[in-house]
Amino acid sequence: MRRRHFLLVASSLAMIGFGGCSWLDGTMRSQSPDPIEAAELSSSQAKLVGDLVVPTGLNPTRVDAVGLVTCLHGTGSDPNPSPERAMLLNEMQLRGVKSPDTILRSGNVSLVKIQGYLRAGIQKGDRFDVEVRVPSQSDTTSLRGGYLLETRLTESAILENRVHHGNLLALAQGPIMIDPTADPKKEKIMMCRGRILGGGVSAISRPVGLVLTPGHQDARNSARVANAVNKRFHTLVNGIKTGLAKAKDDKYIELQVHPRYKDCVVRYCEVIRATPLAESASERMQRIAELSEKLMNPETAADAALQLEAIGTEGVDALLKGLKSNNLEVRFYAAESLAYLDRREAAEPLAQIARQEPAFRLHALAALSTMQDFLAFEQLRDMLALPSAETRYGAFRSLWTMNSKDALVRGEVLGDQFHYHVLDLDGPPMVHATRSRLPEIVLFGRDQRLQTPLALNAGNAIMVTSSGGEEVSVAKFSVQDGDQKRVVSTRLDDVIRAIVELGGSYPDVVQALQEAKTGGVLTSRFEIDALPRADREYERVADDSQSAEPSSEKKADRPKDAATPSRPTPEAFAVRGTAGDSFTPAKTPKADSIDDADAKPAPKKGFFAKMFGQ
Image (tube, rainbow, N blue to C red; front, side, top):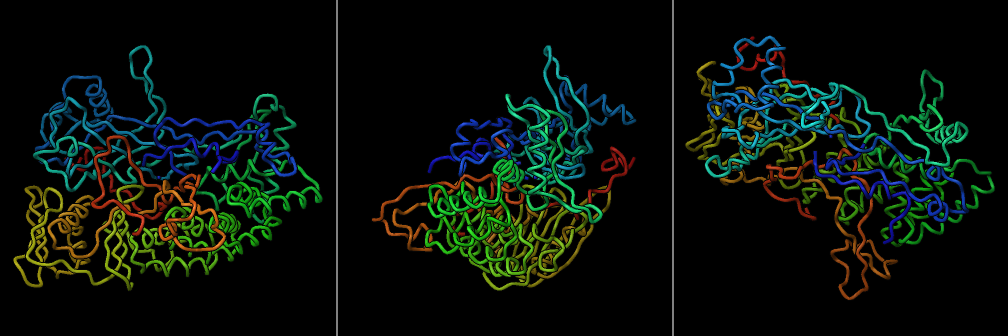
């Protein structure tokens, strides 16, 4: 499946998992397609925006800091003399902390290195994940139960063998989530690395724009590009139609992201690049006719669908014809573009493809999430009771992205710490937790119960026990606050709420769930980040004019050609991870198988309020 000009930028982006779309390995480069090649691939030799510009601002911005983790119950350490220790002491002194050396020697705190990425198009106040790790020479033995105190994140660079920090770009704080299955006696590295889900808050808005390529850099071309974009994309401001592009100078056009593409900025940029600069009505009709033919060919369907999407309303009829094709690839690309145009005809085909074809499932669900039609909502709702873990949770994520206020998926923010949803559904019972983007637990099935007897840990201070019967004891042991206890039923919902009432954090609840599953007292299916993957191959059959069967069920004796859909992963479906990531899902999601606007930050009463009440 040959690569197409509008996918060149997206295919160079690699996601490793930290929060447009997601690219976090720090190695990405914007790639400029050859203008001659782009012109050759364009129908009717139409001059497109992409012939003159390349997008900018799509690479993530890495932010770093040194911070302090507290609440470690003797597993911390006094950091060795180093530039990092000096930086931390200086920060503590600036914040007015008394006797910082004494605090560092307590054994209940640890110096940590913090890292995060500000995704493309992130806005001031948006949240993102941060990674936390202990320096290699530290004597800290575990970060379990730890809480990162508020830390200022900046860009950093090494100049003349010294680390220099830039302006404040974000703040980070919160409870640290480490692998709940890690053995403290055997796996120190895993115990000393973790993540704070949604723990970073951006202090800036990152702009996205278009840069004119050499040879096209003049005020006239800059205005032409802005006008072409504004003709296709606009919004209403006080009832007045306002374009989303603004020519800033002879080289740069600033873009606002259209709400429909807020979770996939790369696709937005590629649709813009596929937009014609100018063409007459007759030229437009001729180009649509040519694109309609290309859409019916699986080899060129993706290119054609994107260009028809860029045309907008006038391209709808050609895309609707694509829905009638017997070829699954053609139907998918046509339906995907129709969804981004908010055409209800896309809902049923996309839902069918999401159920049947793992290779296209992620992008089918993502496209459904952009729609504002009730038919799309109904299709997603019906998937919530399916046996497939990734399909039903993917449908939940789509519904949340579509409308997080809807009663079906709204849930609550439990203990001001994490999103919690109890869905009263048919289908096999399942518990789902996240390890990226935002802390969230979803119970698929209301009356799920734990089996007794049981003994579970929920962090360093909370025990969940039962000697048998229908009662479970949830107890917290604390020298500072005194011992506390709750006696509840075996209902999982009751146990989770009791843990939170006693001050348990999201990582504490996930640890208890993991131990319950490992110990066999949680009989429901337990999944972590069970989202469809973007790297699956679709087995294209030579005579695939026939069937809507899943690729795994196609006859083995047919000629096949493996094809991987070249699409950037939408932000709502990104699963974060980094090289050396210590947290592993309890079960790797198989082929069968949100924005954080409502989450309240942890209460702040000062830099060391969590430990000393200052």
